[in-house]
Image (cartoon, rainbow, N blue to C red; front, side, top):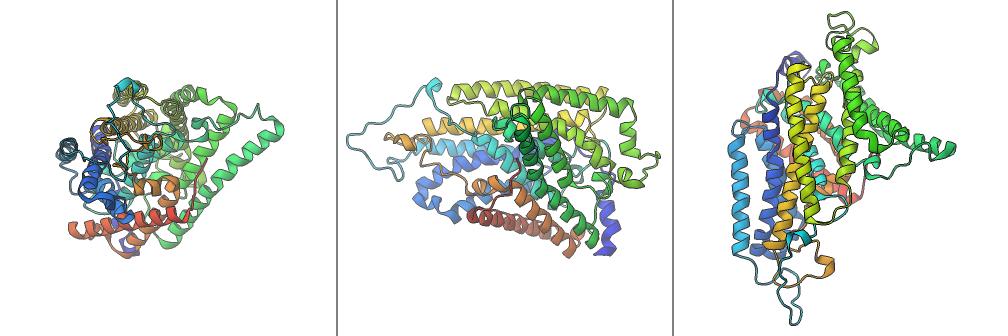
Length: 502
């Protein structure tokens, strides 16, 4: 496949992206498809009973409702996104109506207690909405990874719109936001966000040394993955777009540097200050990009002609952009601290939902202002506009998934209710809405699944000329690839393997 190297390079070069609105629109398919899954399950339970809880039935259901809609949105339905989302939402609304009209006379697998009376729905202000890590945060992280692993291979095919691929310099493509959102989703559930870390000053000298050792050791596996990818790419002649990270740099190195540097800083700085620290880094970094030649260095090299001489020039995009990703990471820690506050009632989460929407609107206003008056969005530098865009993208997705959780909570209480009172143990988990096996499989092993995704993507690209494949062949390959990854995630889950950082 070496002779295809130049044509592959040209396939990814000089792209200008799409609008931030379309990027948000295409990923809006994800929460809409999750809502479809939850509204479909009770109807299937009514029709087929406990078979819905069979692992393979659940696996197929999850693949059809949580994976395929994203794959379709990224490919042959990319020009019909509004219609696709309307169809998903209309189907969910219809299923809710069907479930309401045809509520089962008996609960599934719930014995009728003697002289039991129907439980009256509780008022909204008394309605519980779970505790611990919210489900919508898990869905944000898992579905974000599903979208990433689909796009990483899909981008190599003609069926994936070029406007969704990574931009050359300025612009906003679907894949441009992926790295920033990955930093955010890791920070969202980090030790600092969960309040499970200890500051370096309160730990003493011995404790401080131990904390620093833990930070470095937790990122060693990520560095190793980066080295493995570097060696494999260079030895196989696998096509690479140098302006993405540089000659030797890659995503794993960026992830390791960002998590390590952020974690070290948060040993000194209180996590409660992470939001202000994120703002300070973003503004200071943009000042260097705009007024002190750092931006010109990243885009044009030290000689002004794109030099790649020396390690710094060769990897300038990857090295410098880490600063912008650190700002995103700190913002993610702040968001995680807000979302992981103890809330048990529906009303508490409704207030949080409204506050996040206010923040989201402000961020979108700032995206427009920064792109117009400071600098357009640039992934290569991860500049201020890129930072704000990434945060607005992530907050919008979080609020969308939170809205799905709110609808599910209302559905459990007022639509999918059993006519008999549930035991205290089952009160928070209605038997008509079993958990997703795919989400349970992906959630603990996002980085490990991402590694397998890279291996499979490389294998496909080294085996065939992806650019020349027809629409039908491309879809068969992409569906097969997605299915294999889901099987791998399921296998890792059942074997109890985990590769987590921080």
